[in-house]
Length: 170
Image 1: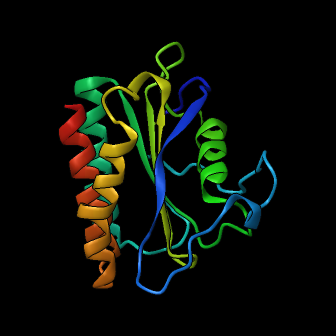
Image 2: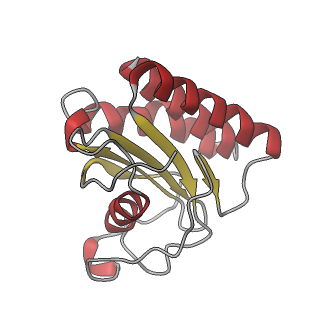
């Protein structure tokens, strides 16, 4: 699973996951770079503990199948807290720290959910920016994920987001 480190470009904007949430601006977060203290646990790293074992396994199987068929790496991560960091910087630094995507291809994708801050982010490597555009990813967040999140179904939202991203990449 471990790949060579690559740089990721943040293409997909943070989204409000639950009504009443305030948008986080860069000035509200910590300065760049962030050093996320989250260890990679596999294709799904559920540090916030929001998935059951079965849900985590189902997501992992989908992500493994995507990697086998396309060679693109995608991971899902949840964090208990961003510790005051801006979600965009946090997600990019996490992706680079973990080395998601193939060296020379920059084809990694990280879907990050921070349930306590009620934020979600999709970070996409430079090599996939023409396929997973900012507009497409924002649509995935707004139309596929947030409706589930508003109902309290975090897994359903993440699963729907992963399905939409895989459909576009496959």
